[in-house]
Each structure stands twice: as structure tokens, then as C-alpha cells.
Amino acid sequence: MVTVEKLTFAFQKNEPLFTGLDMRLEAGNTYGLFGLNGAGKTTLLNQLSGMLFPHKGSCTVLGENVKKRLPKTMSEIYILPEQFDLPKIDAEIYAELHAPFYPRFDHTYLSEILNEFQVDRQKNLTELSYGQRKKFLIAFALSTNSKLVLMDEPTNGLDIPSKSQFRKIMAASDQSNRCFLISTHQVRDLDSIIDHVIVLNNGKIIFQQSVMDISTTLSFEKLSDDSDKIALYSEDVFGGKAAIISKNKSSKETQIDLELLFNGIIQKQELINNQFKS
Ligand SMILES: Nc1ncnc2c1ncn2[C@@H]1O[C@H](COP(=O)(O)OP(=O)(O)OP(=O)(O)O)[C@@H](O)[C@H]1O
Image 1 (cartoon, rainbow, N blue to C red):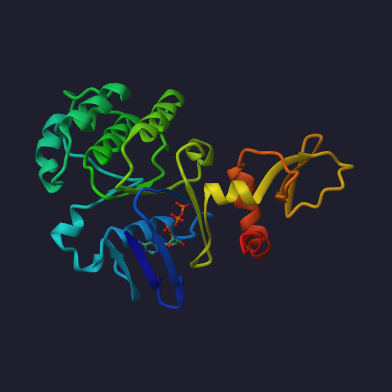
Image 2 (image 1 turned 135 degrees about the vertical axis):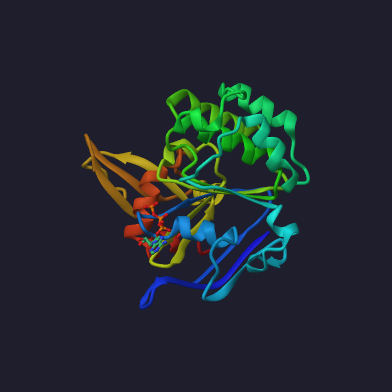
């Protein structure tokens, strides 16, 4: 669904942000996009939504170069930015005005999600809190039914119950023909939603694997100080080490620790990636 080829881009001359970045995303998947501050996650989402253009290379969505900004392509891409302004109108009028851009917009679904999130549809959007406005836009994003949904820090500003509602709504949404790319630092908010992990660092995608392959390849364990297990990467924690270990037949099933995995990839990129080469 999405192909990024040799994407090169810089905001300032001689300070390249992306240097020949390649990435492919398929329909039916929800990708978590992780990277250090300033790695370029927001910029990549903006490139994929046609708001910024590559200096070299291309971003293709559903077979069309996004840079052409064809209406048929734009109607299949929805970006939920981290920072946004909303007009002084209520949610219902906003939906009436903006839904026509999205041919499969589902007004019933929008109402359902807004009810779940308890967002007041009659209030002007400018009078809602940041978190309430964010919930409105999440609901709008899902209701567009566009094929590619890009979300930048969607859970930032959401209170604890809203974060779990977000996870529930995402898990219940029909994702079979859609592709979600979600950039976040709040890894715990996403760990039950995403089925692929992507890490962006130094202008390139340095890791992209499915959650299933990660689970079958790596194990995430707490090791005591006298353990003889060899860790690919470890961090000191109270009473021992949190470790990423190469999985073997005797390894038990463990839950992926996304935070540890991210740190491991940043520190030991080659070693971790080598585990996935059969
Ligand atoms: N409009 C702009 N003009 C100049 N430089 C910019 C602009 N927008 C972003 N940058 C720079 O590009 C780099 C990547 O920024 P970007 O916001 O894409 O990173 P990010 O991975 O989303 O960061 P964060 O995790 O902090 O949100 C940063 O060094 C930033 O300073």
C-alpha cells in the first residue's frame, strides 16, 4: 500500500534528515513508528501525506506518487497531527463539512466513537480541552475509512480511561483493508494495538519486524545477577537485569517489552537485526 523509495530530504542544506530511506507498508497492518526525539517521525508522516515533498526518491500510496496530490489519493490518506487547530464549529458541522472528502465516511461510526469517548458533539470544538479535541480527531480519523491513517502521538493528552478506550476502539475497528502508521513515544499505549514495529534512526529505517516474528525470535526476561544466560541487550533493574535474549526451543513465551526492544535496537542495531536472518 505504501512504498517509500530512496527518500532523501533536508530542512537545512548540509543537514540531511533522510538519506535514502526505504520502507514498505502493507494493508491490514498497524505499524508502530518509534524513534528518538528529532529522528524525523513527524516529517516522515508529513511526507507520506503529501504535505512535504522529497528532495530525491519517492513516496507512493496505492500506486500513486503522493507528491502529485491527486484527489483520489488524498481521499485515501488521513493524518492526525500532534499539533492542530480546529475551527469554531461543533463536531456535527465539522463532520458535515469535511466528510465529503472521504467517499466511505461513516457518520454512524463517528457518533459511536464520540459517545464512547464522551465528547460533546454540540459544543464548539474550540471550547473542548486538548484531550477532548484529540479524541474528536481520533474518532474522525477512524470514521473516514481512508486506507492509510497516519497518527502522530495519538494518545498524548488523553487521560488514563481515554487511553484504554483508544486501545479498545482501535482493536475493534475493521483494519482488514486499512493501514495504520502510528508514531509515538508512549510505547505502552500501543503495545496491544500494533502488529509491526518500525524504528527510525539516523535518517533510515533501522528495524522493521512483525510482532509475531519478534515474539518467535526474541525473549524478554528478567535475569538475576548470577544468571549465565547471554543477553543481546540488557538494562539494570531492581534485583537484576531486564534482558533481550535470542530465543531457542527451551525459551518460554514472554511478552514483548517495547521500551527495552527500542533501546536494544538503538544500542545494538546489528546484533538484534542479525537474529532475524535465517
Ligand atoms: N519546519 C522545520 N524547519 C526546520 N527544521 C525542522 C522543521 N521541522 C522539523 N525540523 C527538524 O527536523 C528534525 C526532525 O523533526 P521531527 O519533528 O520530524 O522529529 P520527530 O522524530 O517527530 O521528533 P519528536 O519525537 O521530538 O516529536 C528535527 O531536528 C527538527 O528540528
